[in-house]
Length: 249
Image (cartoon, rainbow, N blue to C red):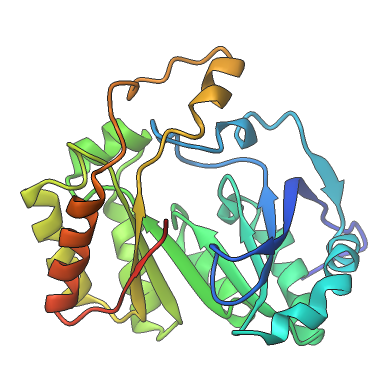
């Protein structure tokens, strides 16, 4: 709960009319920091914990309010993304609590690399959880993200048991997540949890310039975006399994 010392959030930037980060028209808040270090991260500039603005929950809500009239279209609202906002749970809780009081739909875009105490804290104020799945082979997951997938997958199952509104996202990374083994594991996992839809995110190279600008080596430089036909094949495969699939291009 908020105390006399109001928790401030490290905010990197905003997107005022987002249409790719949850349902409807959304005000997207990108928070600084992440617990993972994905080799294909397109927001690497949000992870250095250096360039950010400090906002109180009320100050951030004041930024959102002028756009509230647009949220009535298609369950629009506020999405907190990053980075990964799950590493600033107290701020997210306080801000989303204000959003709920103001009648604004709330979505969190996260890897779910956290503990169950954080999830339990946020459950009352999060309307939609958008969870990015990286890889189902733990060794490959560790290589791609620097962290194990064991706790993450357990957390997804935990949200499923709690009957949280849940969207799952899978980046289609050629040679890594589009393999027969990973797709088989994806299908099996999807059958084991309760969720609304699975969103396919074709890998892109738009963020490589950020790595170069920061003087960081981009280890997946030889990987090209997936062929549209391959992505459509995966989409149809998942739909055949009975899943609702959203292709985010």
